[in-house]
Amino acid sequence: MTAAATAVDERLAPTSLVRRLLGRPELGAVVGAVAVFVFFSIAAPTFLQASSLSTILYSASTIGIMAVPVALLMIGGEFDLSAGVMVTTSALVSSMFSYQMTADVWVGVGVSLLVTLAIGFFNGFMLTRTKLPSFIITLGTFLMLTGLNLGFTKLISGTVSTKSIADMEGFPSARAVFASKWEIGPVTLQVTVLWWLALVAVATWILLRTRAGNWIFAVGGGADAARAVGVPVVKTRIGLYMGVALCAWISGQHILFSFDVVQSGEGVGNEFLYIIAAVIGGCLMTGGYGSAIGSAVGAFIFGMTSNGIVYAQWNPDWFKFFLGAMLLLATLLNAWVRKRAEASK
Image (tube, rainbow, N blue to C red; front, top):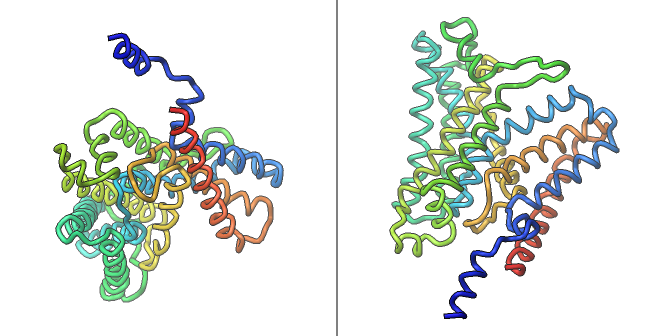
């Protein structure tokens, strides 16, 4: 009885702050973000200006909006290599449907949402039905969407870009939702920052406060074991891919209503940036571990690095070198933090 009581007391004993911090997936990313911030603050005096902060936040938000669902997908043990071109597909469908049908742009926005969600459903459905690796499934979708984006745009518009829809009905209100900005003193706040923060908050709530969050971690930790205890593995995976599609739609509408036209070749390669932000933020490539907050920190590191190199007046050709180095260092740091957390239990 005494031994049992002691065991219960140990489980109920309060955990120290250090141990709780070591158990957080985003700890390594936060340490890395502080280091990057200090480094560029010293290397580039203009880095700390308010206008620079506006640019950094905007760059981080455009990656962060997609890094959030990609992080959840990776926690669930899967990848999506079609995420980058899906953003462009979303923008193209919205633009071309509105222009060709001479409809209110909101009609095109709605059609684009349905099409993009259908692509996400296709990825999840094919994954669960064929049992093929997500790498193969989404690589196929990536290639198909790349060809469709270019082929349909040239077929309908005669060029590689869409026609301007800036003078169409509904454009001002759609721009206000997806591409507005506000001047707050010397800082320019883009609406994408609000979208990004809202998505991080919702994703964090899902992961930590809902049954669906438990399902995501369980599926990423081991699909067979999760299925054995009643987790709806198929629905969870399809839902995760549709979450990626939803955020791709948001990003696509931002591109469209920011620039009025869309280039059909955009988005290729961005899927790796989303994955990098999630990995830097603490997500494991093997699934079952990570956080939405970590993906936000990873995206912020991307924003600081991509702009800090410019502010420091370095050759921007070195950007990918620094990005790759950060990926390796962050992965090693995250692995070390995780081992320390497991050892302290």
